[in-house]
Length: 152
Image (cartoon, rainbow, N blue to C red; front, side, top):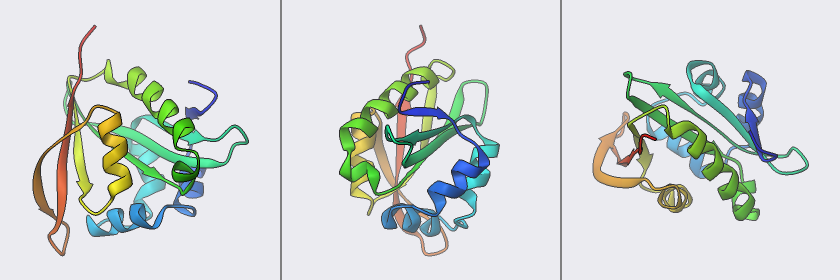
């Protein structure tokens, strides 16, 4: 771990949930999930990680749900701190992803097409959008995002 991220706890999930960016909350709801999915995501995930500023302020939370021996469903939800201190957050996210990706050949998920900040971040992290998939109870457009992981 680094000075900008550490192993996440259920309590961290609640902290991030209470400070989610509006767009991230809409992404969770648009997929047909309850916002309470955030803290439970920590419990279901490998590599559950809490991102924070130097003063401990929450920036986001992430994890990977293993789907097979080589495939993981990656997720990340953020607070407004990622837009006020983007360089700090992106550095921490890149470092975390380097630690995580060696455990998988493929990481993927769906990302709300309306969440522009997430798309910029995903691009910086090396993810690619493959196609648009109708998602959730309202069949909203979500991008299927993937990253092939190099095995060392």
